[in-house]
Image 1 (cartoon, helix red, strand yellow):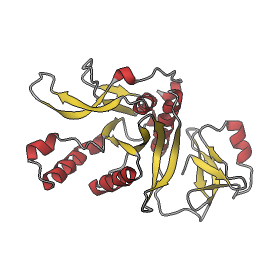
Image 2 (cartoon, helix red, strand yellow):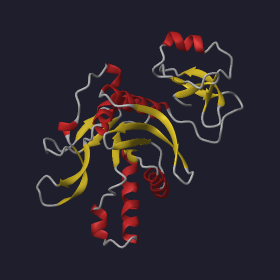
Image 3 (tube, rainbow, N blue to C red):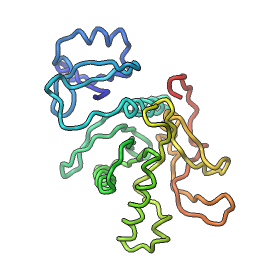
Image 4 (cartoon, one colour):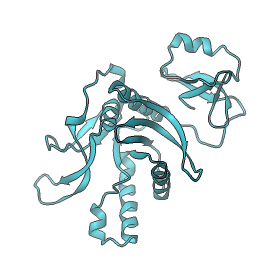
Length: 263
């Protein structure tokens, strides 16, 4: 399952989610092989989910080893990229790249910002700590920053792994507990499993106007591309303790008009 494909005859990249339903219906009548997907140009068929999501899939017998992404994951990518575009940024889904040494990667969303290219990864499934480190390192080697949106139910295990990693690097346990990986922001993505319309990104406002904010994905996409996320200082409400953390500058979030389906 993918949101982009290439027209085999011309090399033109097309998106399923920005294609009108009328055009999609016409494309579905074209011969298999008209559209190809992935690095290996696998012949694609065009599908529509029961909830109306248009997507490309490998033709029968042509699928690779990678497990298909959920509709929940796909819709998250769409909302992020549409929010970025609404804020005036050049953003694309499922963009491939490679490090100077040839290690390949594919970003869920890749956006061009004034600070350089930024990848946003939507991590809904449990992922090993080593995978976070290696995938982040590939982006860094390619000159790409990365932000991870991690399902909130996985954050406790992720935090334990981070603390253990930093202790192994020589930090005292108390310091490691409150230390943030400054090249690997891991931001909570909240919402019931399987309910893509209920997904919200949890951020901490730098101005302390609220303990936290629950942002629609499109709003988060617009803000992250505009530089709203930055390293700052978080603290308990009573001010008894503070620690470095990723904070959200609401003054840098552009106003965008959200259709009801984006919220």
